[in-house]
Image (tube, rainbow, N blue to C red):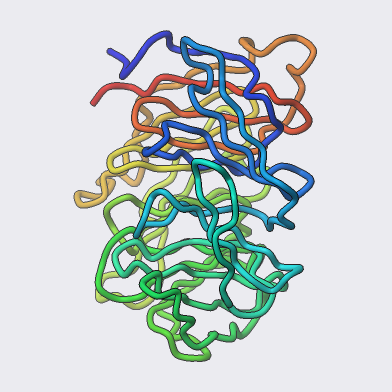
Length: 320
């Protein structure tokens, strides 16, 4: 077994308390939202040099952010209190423009294949697509049934595809009609979720305080959802992320690396575990009990942030 980089685990301060960070490939930076609604960017996070951290002016930022698929110099920031989404320059964290993204946009995702930004409203009852070319708002889709907590757009494809996740379960939609065209649902109390890097119909989810990871996909024929694989991890799952070939599941103590098997599926119904890394023991004792506030998957390493502390952990990926 070899790793993408070394050392296997590094720990240090990134200069700001972040939640739900993302990785900027252009800047080699960890970018996330602070508790007071600002943005913060940390270049060289936990690398050989000192982290260079930039914090924005107050922005009334919502729950997460998305780096633009059209122009990776820009990041989209939901501003539910202002009823807008801001386009922010990643290098300076200065706002460039605001645009309409439907009612109280609070949580963002993207349909990467279509270059469509997807804005989930603060009440979880509507989704507004925005074309990233020209920032043109498409019709808002009103969601029937229970509200959603989060949204996940497809990573490729020629249709607008997205999954909604929440306590009532997973729902899979296509198109821009209102109400949108539902192509399947599954009653799992979803606390964390991530889409597949290759297959638009696949997602990986875990229940609230649950230690079982589910791989969920469309049924044969494209209508309905079903569980195609599961695996029980050492403790409850707090975050899930993916790249093109791997799933990364974070528990209170471990980072677990698993196989996606996007095309072949799981013949025995079990998601293969490739590696388990105990990161918790590497944290300074003063913050060893801090809860995970986010995970970002970079090209060679996975980064974890923690509530109430600027400390972060960087863990090397397992080489393919």
